[in-house]
Length: 134
Length: 176
Image 1 (tube, helix red, strand yellow):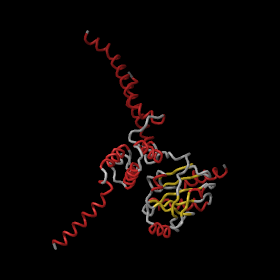
Image 2 (cartoon, rainbow over the protein chains, first blue to last red; image 1 turned 45 degrees about the vertical axis):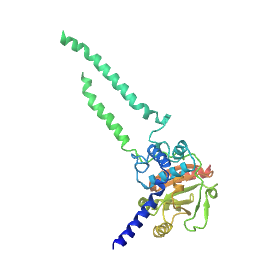
Image 3 (cartoon, helix red, strand yellow; image 1 turned 90 degrees about the vertical axis):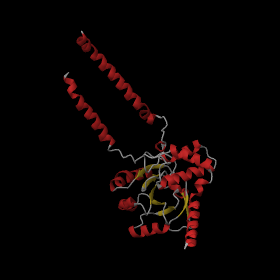
Image 4 (cartoon, each protein chain N blue to C red; image 1 turned 180 degrees about the vertical axis):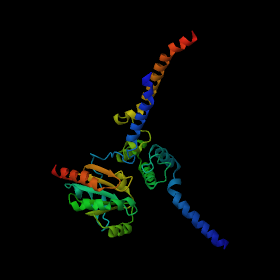
């Protein structure tokens, strides 16, 4: 029985090693894959990065990134590959363009409006307070 | 002073307006970067004759529809009637792209529900799907005579979409 168990265990570990092989074979490449996967959005689960996602498409895309890097493509080229197919939306940090200008400027516009509103409000308030202290 | 009373109402109106628009937008519907660009090239085996390879160049000169589907895709069953109607309307050949699927299951699915496709490509690993930016099956593309993508739909086809968007577009492209 223990022998059977040992055989079973060795088979299981052998297979798990096989399943994990594309990941562990080259740690430098793997680091680059993960760094890129963190820049890219999983299109199936839109609030996750590719790195965080286990969706089938995310796994395919990570494998494709690995393949492209192995072929000698640069990080820029891999990102371009994804944008060509899935659009700017696939980037977690969208580029500054006419269509995304509001996205980038919006918070600052709101901040400016808030500050302007506050100043107007404070100025209006002053005379009444002066009256009170007099 | 009196005007101040309307501030909450105005705030409510602005919030309501934003929500009315925002909640109606479908975040899954992304603009395709492929529209207006050449459809990605392919040379894939046919689902019914795996030893035969079919290439994109054979569709040049024809306005055609590409429908991405899989036997594991539940919503593909939902759009099947609308897709069949589109194929029967005869405006344009409908090419099926069987995406990340096993041939056996795909063929069984077509046998069970009916095969609306002029021909079916078999993209077992989903590589061509990736080139077409597929992220949610079913997806449908309309491609013109020159091989340029003119329309893309992510999600199921409805009879309205077929009638009001796809068929008129096919007619228009055929006239051009």
